[in-house]
Length: 180
Image 1: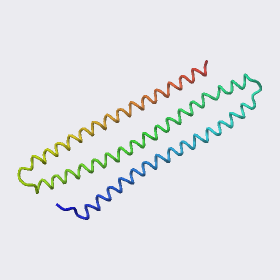
Image 2 (image 1 turned 90 degrees about the vertical axis):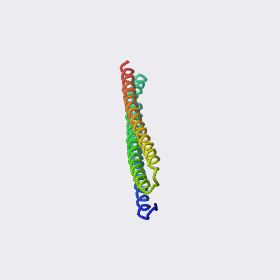
Image 3 (image 1 turned 90 degrees about the horizontal axis):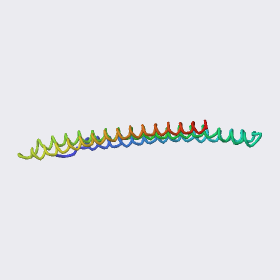
Image 4 (image 1 turned 60 degrees about the vertical axis):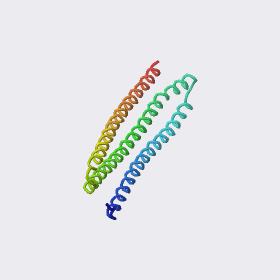
């Protein structure tokens, strides 16, 4: 069995498309991270200017301390929002890259099964057992990959639930501290 120029061209096209999909996903994530970071830096700068002005306008030490304490809650809220935004972008990027990998693995499996079918037609008598064993091994590895993917998704969902719970705990602690 020979490899034709069309097969080489098709494989190269598939590889380039996969590479471009990965690059696009990474660039989109980088762009989102940059926007989130730029917004956070701008907000922090504006807040620090406003806080400094407020502190400079304090009439006595008690007002100064009260102002400092009042700055903590918004800062915590903004830090939580920033962390959550970064986490969401990372999760989105991971999901997109996983889709690309799954699609590529599926295409590879289809191509490999097609190749096996072609080889088995031209194989000598008695090689059916070897071809069946290879197909069985491929099916078992695909099943294991699917199970691993499901476990990874469940772990991601659990981690996301834990992040949300931790966020709410920190918010609750900050509100309780403010009330005290």
